[in-house]
Length: 517
Image (cartoon, rainbow, N blue to C red; front, side, top):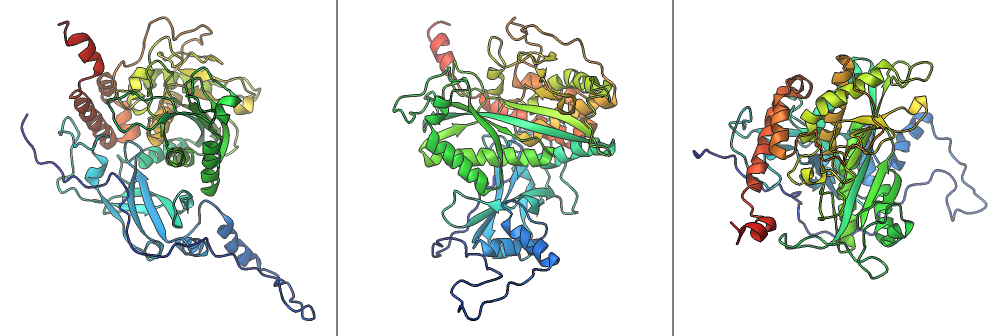
């Protein structure tokens, strides 16, 4: 293979924190009180002042745990909390938080922030793949500008110093959205719905494992020791006792989430050994992707505080169930707010069936955005709880696309294929794009099934990463819906990751090939 000049490898695996000596603060300054002051002389009571409506509106944002409307509000929000540092973060194609940290005063001083474009073109292992197909690097590795979305401003509750964070979008030097970055890909798909007078609504469910610390990748992962002092075993689905084994850790997850204005709908123990699931309330796709992005950081930090790991690998432990990120989806009419999946009489509408038809027709080609790594396909095997098909059915958990029992207003489609290792922005973008294609092209689904369809040995999906990449590139509709720029970039990175994986010799090869071939 001919050598090529590679982009410079930036040290961007973690936030570049500014180090400086500073005293530790004991907490944010207390808010000022308008009205009677404690300790004032009794003979001269202060008269409570009437707060003008404008002032009340202005001060309301100070109580918000998440989001402000302007940089002026951000400056005041940071000041009253005594925030010293601010993390400007953005998800890369793997969903890893990349960005810069700076003093809060510098952030509110109209500072221009930039990251190198090559940062969004490397693999999960930090390699820069060869240019292939339509995958090309910027010839000068130019800058991409970070544009803070102030509606995501929140505290970082696990930091010892008062710290805040804000999620950023990426634009080029001309101010245009960078088409291959995850948040922009999802925004592009959401706009397709808006242009048709629709609004997609989603509710993700994220599964993950707690595992004992593992510093040597040659050793398999093992379940952690719980409160009982014993190693956690499987078969604990919906067990309250299984959750109680990690009471203090879960308390920290709730505490950290509340500190960021993140709302957990429910938390359960899944079937795997120390496998948990968090369900989020339904809402706007970009906001929900932001929440999943932040929840992953939060859960990892809470676990580390208790000296264990939280992992979102799709199949972390051999013989245990994989971890999914199921996505519940519906679509409402922008003008009326009515669920377009239901007719006026409450029956399923043609758009509902067309959405399902789009999922069946296009999701197999988009699977690489929902199952992005070699490990992801270890979860999608028959005989396990994960689907291996593109079938649909009413309240059938063995299908890829399940229609939960609900009333007409809550009619929705659950996509059970995405794994928890997926970038939430890209998984949501892919799933919604497939449904949109079905709706606008009037794609008809096949008949629903009420039988078990994931135990017959048939796998009607791409079976591995390279096969999934090939199907992704071959689907012409994605070039327009997701953008040609994104398809080329993402496919090139996934091919590069597969090549890196192929350099590793597995224990299976040593066990069965070493002395037998």
